[in-house]
Image (cartoon, rainbow, N blue to C red; front, side, top):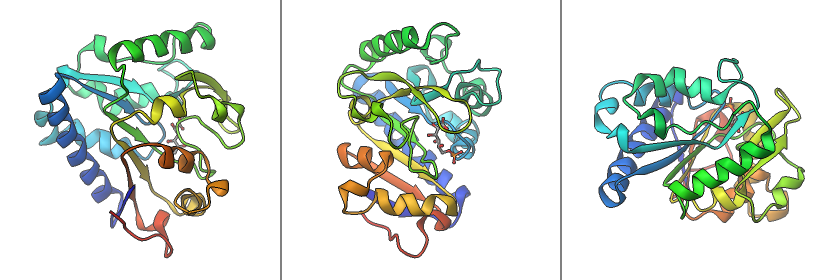
Length: 240
Ligand code: 6PG
C-alpha cells in the first residue's frame, strides 16, 4: 500500500493523470486494452479534466479503453447526481472514446437486472479484473457505494449489487469487494479535512476499525493513496 501526500488537489490530480497514462500505455501494449473503473463524486473531476486536455489527451489510445464505473446513483445521466453524467461532462465527451466501450450502470429498468447484466459485461470484458480502478472515500469511510454497516460488505460472490445510501440518492449500484480487489491497481483520491478521521482508521493496523475503504485497501493487491494535506492531517505520513 503506497501513500503519497501532495501540496494540493491540482498536484494530486497531475500525479494521478501521469499514473493513469503510464498504466494505460503498458496495459494496451501488453493486452490490447485498458479496462478502468471511474470514480464518482467531486474529487476526480480535476483529474478527468486533465486527462481530457493536452498533453494527456494525446497520450492515450482512447479507442482501446473500456470505461466502467465503480458505482452509480440510480438516476438518469442527465441528473446532476449522476456519476456517469459527471464523467461524460468532464472526460468522456471530450476524448475519442468508442461509445460502445463506455459502460454505464444506470439503465432505467430494475436495478437488480442492471446488476446482473453489468456483472456479465464486466466478466466478459475483464474476466480477471479491471486494470485500473479509481475510487474516492466518503467522510464516513465508504468507497464506491459500499457504506459502513451494510450487508453487501459481506458479499463474496457477486461483482455488482444494489445498495442503499444513507445520504443523497438512496438507491445505488456498486461493484463489490470481490470485484474491486481483483483490480491490477486501485487509486484512492482523497482530499479534504472531513476525510481525515476515517482515513486514519482505513490506514490503521486495527482491522476491526477499518471502514469499507480500509477493508478494500487491505484486500487488494496494489493500492495507491493520493492525499492532500487536509485529508492526511498531521498523523498520516507518506509510505511506499
Ligand atoms: C459516489 C462515489 C463515492 C465518492 C465519495 C467521495 O458515488 O458518491 O462513488 O464513493 O467517491 O463519496 O466523494 P467526493 O469526491 O465528492 O468527496
